[in-house]
Amino acid sequence: MSFRATDTNGAVWLFDVSGAYSSTRPGLKRMDVLWKTLGRAGVLHEARRRHPDRDDLGPLVLLSTDVPPARSAGGRVLRTVRPDDHSGPVHDVIELLDGEGLAQLQHYALNGRP
Image (tube, rainbow, N blue to C red; front, side, top):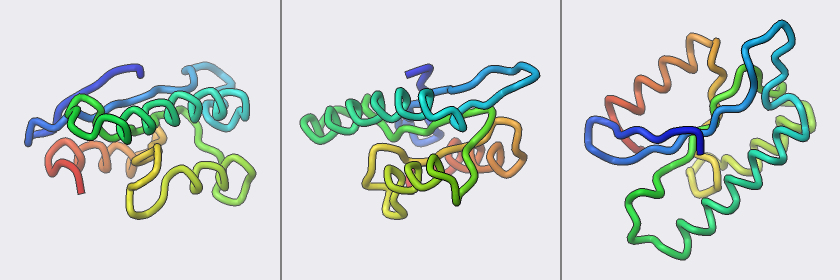
């Protein structure tokens, strides 16, 4: 993972950053980047399943410069790994340059896990 942080409750969160700040910043819109990222997320998810007592394997948030549109193939894939009940490999996907995404990160930092 790119980095980890703790919320105000002391719980660990993991973050994986995809994409670069450049004139073309496809981030997770690129299917090869998306699949590599989801491969790492799948391994982490399996580690959580096998070791539920490890508190260092917190929820995974994907951060990207660009996120695939909801109706695209990539958007459908992301919905599959990010179920509403947070039981999947990915807790959330946040676009770095989006104000709502930054507000969501702040919410996680202040309020912890749902």
